[in-house]
Amino acid sequence: MSGPLLQVSQLGKSFGGVKAVDGISFDLAAGELLALIGPNGAGKSTTFNMVNGQLPADRGSILLGGQELVGRQPRAIWRLGVGRTFQITETFSSLTVVENVQMALLSHDRQLFSMWRRAADHRRDDALSLLMQVDMAAQADRPCSELAYGDVKRVELAMAMANQPRLLLMDEPTAGMGPQERHALMALTRRLVAERGMAVLFTEHSMDVVFAYADRVIVLARGRLIAQGRPQEIRGNREVQEVYFGSGKTFEAGTLNVAAVAGDRP
Ligand code: ADP
Ligand code: MG
Image (cartoon, rainbow, N blue to C red; front, side):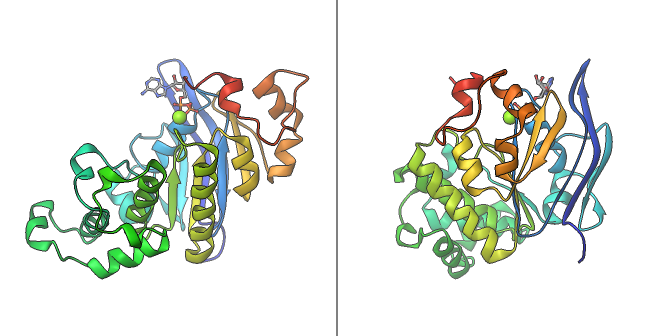
């Protein structure tokens, strides 16, 4: 396939009078890690939910490998290769690490969940190989409920990989993590992008993570795309700095956490 994997054009969505996403356009190539940043309420999650089909777009187009996603159901979009990370919920935390990944493989294979009891051996080797890719094979037989938070996130990533996504959407993947865990998860994501030629679109509040791992950054403010470029270009962009901080402040402190500045985290 030539051209970008994902082509978003003039995408828009309003809620009542609020233009949550106001005609944005951007591309994403296979093997690219693209950060979507912007203050709280900028339209990041709305954009994600239109790409994965959870929300119908009011206007615009989302092409994946040339195929239109707008108008399709989430399940159909997922089958076309748009994955996202799901949180392991209470119900599944009693299952072991490898069982959770086997569940994800079952789902990919479109078998019914009711078959799970009979299918406990389903693709265990494939599940273990996915766990190896996220450095979790050694903990395969532990219940997820016993894992450290950062390790749960690795398992969730392995589960998302079970569907062999061409595009993976990660909305605030590092929320609730400490700095070290954040870097570990993004370094892992970076490696999976390189190894699998997968594309990733992610949102992230920590600017040092964005600048360290993203190939490219797009910036939303009040539903509009106000800047895009390489991390270094975004770091120096006046308009972006003003949206985040008002005038007079910059991104220069490498450890600056925008959530704290923008005030949209408890
Ligand atoms: P972000 O993820 O960047 O914080 P969102 O996409 O969640 O931003 O929200 C963008 C705007 O759309 C905000 O003004 C928000 O209040 C509004 N919005 C989002 N989802 C809904 C909804 N389901 N109903 C009404 N308004 C919504
Ligand atoms: Mg959001």
